[in-house]
Image 1 (spheres, helix red, strand yellow):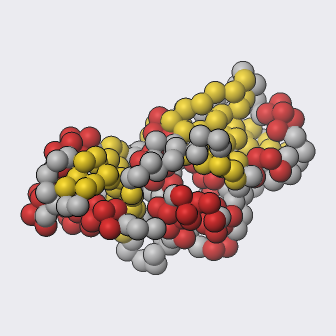
Image 2 (cartoon, helix red, strand yellow):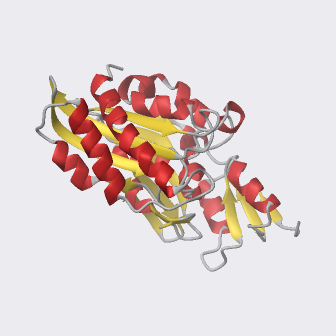
Image 3 (cartoon, rainbow, N blue to C red):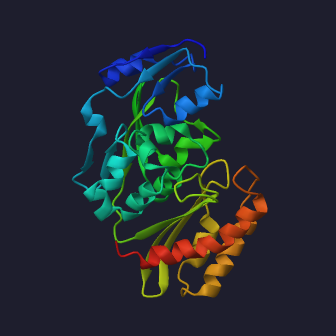
Length: 287
């Protein structure tokens, strides 16, 4: 392993100053669960790592704003979010997703900002947070800005972040009477990398859908919104036939590729089945 600097700033501004907009070999590190694996594999050879573990506690806090939005500090650990009462009550789909995200040892150290910035296409949080229209607050040497999570991920391990920018906050709008579900399909343990992830957000009256949002993860290089399929379900009476048809349409429309977690045909079959299950789960979600 090539020698590198390991910096331990105590303040966010100090951490940002230690990064380098012109040198991608200078990298921030939060929980380190992904960075260390990449270094061991020889994929990442940093000249400097800037640890975010010691910066101000305010970036680990979870709070509800006056408008009912959920504000999550970018350095909050996944296990903190999994057990947070406000998230369990107001955003149960998030709490449930956190419980199946990796194993407990990883959740205890991995941070939400680093998780999103990693941009692995098989992560669970990008599709779920995109479904909820969450956005991130980003800080860098040029200042602060906000961006929807859906626009943050641009492709395989690629984000809209500059090398000197950090995710300092995740902001999630209130559910506002809508319900949601995330179906994670794995070939091994429930906390393993997903072969397919399907996130569904609905608003319904009795057995009729008034609003539908659908996002698929792990099957493409970034979370993908199924706008046409979702629109086709609005106003219809919920039935097994309608959901099966929607799943088959989604599998036909989505450009899915093979990877180590499953073939394209296998993922298409899973999508045709689990899309309807995710919608059913969202409809029946009563916290």
